[in-house]
Length: 229
Image (cartoon, rainbow, N blue to C red; front, top):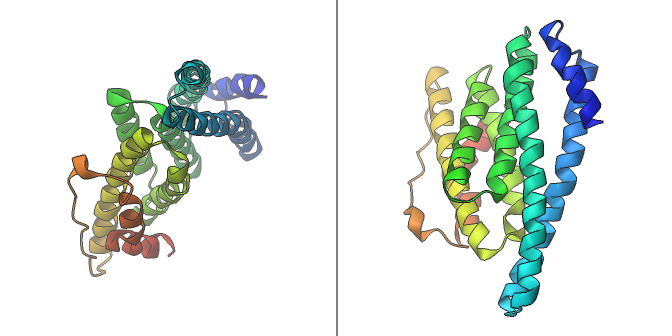
């Protein structure tokens, strides 16, 4: 289905995708990426358990298999991101379509950030924020899109190993801080009293306790209120 919808999407240089075609494209990629994201989370959890048991032989095999899954994830994400940049966004005439594709772009950069490491993870995280920011029709729209991504990412934190958890919470901290900034900008533009800006903690001190801190953050409470309007 992905291959077929990719061919269809490449025809948008002539005519923009219909809503039905756009939704089919979304579902096609969501299905293939969803299965591999689930596989990656499971294999990462198994890897973490085997590492704690000092079972090096199993860990080596698991890492090799995880690498294959990550290669598939990269190929899928790179494919849809190139399609969005080269065909879908440039040919979008309706604001709704452009927001839809830019939100997808943010999603697939976020999926890359889930398993990338080092500079690649940072780049994917920054690209995620740029895409979500660009997707805004108004400040509340961007706030709501990013909040949805934040909530989805929060629900996945407990499935990660210790190393991945620390890296992921750093990304969550970046996303939370941007949400605080955007919501403050939104309330200023609309004459609403600004919420207090969340203080930025030392990134090197991020640990498991960050989960509860993020969830209880005053800025997040403010953002939820903003997104629900």
